[in-house]
Picture (cartoon, rainbow, N blue to C red):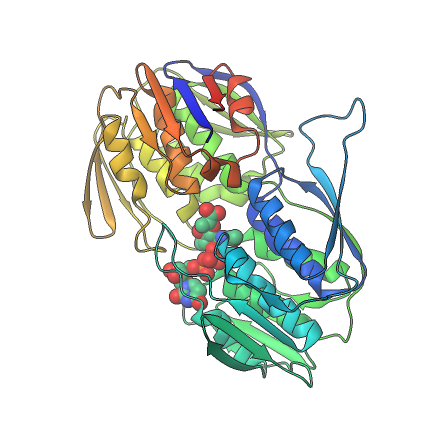
Length: 429
Ligand code: EPU
């Protein structure tokens, strides 16, 4: 199993290219199930989760062709995927596949909408909490699906097709919104989604679906209206830049000090996080090419932050902010309001010398002068990268074990950081 070794203390300077967003790529790949034509996706990041979803889609009969690089092409450009769900050969997504990646549960809606039936394993718990799927099922029920839960599987049927309906989410849910939008795209009549998630990835998927012939308006607001159409066709779409990767590297630069251009980043996708970064005393400058992050040797100021759905501070940056605040001058408070158990990084950060007290959903972080390198364990994707951020500023050597968590969501992390001067390397046994 690969490990990452980091020797802390180097400032970061240079440029980091931001990849396409994982959390847009996954639902975009799943949206290919809605049409017999080929969907072409550009700017797709090279991630373990993309490969895993490709296997899951393959099980349904979907062909995914990945265009190879041509000589002279910039290695930082994302890849192009040609995805064809011409013949769906199987409408079941088995436990062995779904349990490895929660987002694969989302195949339920497009399979049901196009084929009239789908059987998908319940995803089960994961390191950040229980993460139920009741609201995804509620949305399909409102669109006329008959739903049974049997033997750990959700079986959804709509032999006569889905019909438009009113869906009001009691809680903002990204997966629930993707599910409702994809199902409604092929339903008869109009669907209105209230309290929809406003995450940029929802808008990106809706843009792509509209290129495929769907009639979706209001994506990016909390009210989305969808006029169902009988069929969707092929399209070509470029995945938007990853706002969580952007925020992660921005926090890394704030941690080490330095001056880095996050190329291709779009600041409006993470304004709340960049505002928090500015409060810490880091300079954030939007430029034509992306976002520039600079910090001199002045100490970081502490902050009080609560995670919230977009446009609030993202839960997917909570662990990274906590790593940064371990070195602030004073006391910070970070409240996790989306997932009940997303604090796996706290114990590992403590191994590096952080002083963090947990009380329910709120972490109180007393900044310390020095962190010290130690062996640590990656637990989930965002928790792992928070350990990398802490290690970049820790004295001595840190070894991050179970790196496969990082490979799920960060493309060439060690290359991107070492190109900016970090002492970081991957060790393969
Ligand atoms: N929830 C329910 N019932 C449901 C669905 C959700 O109670 O049926 C609850 C969840 O337990 C949670 C809240 O609603 O408390 C929000 O969950 P949401 O459905 O929005 O999360 P998700 O769609 O499963 C996506 C991202 C996550 C990200 C969350 C929140 C993808 C592939 N995943 O998950 O990303 O944290 O939205 O923004 O888009 C990550 O990339 O590391 C990651 C975990």
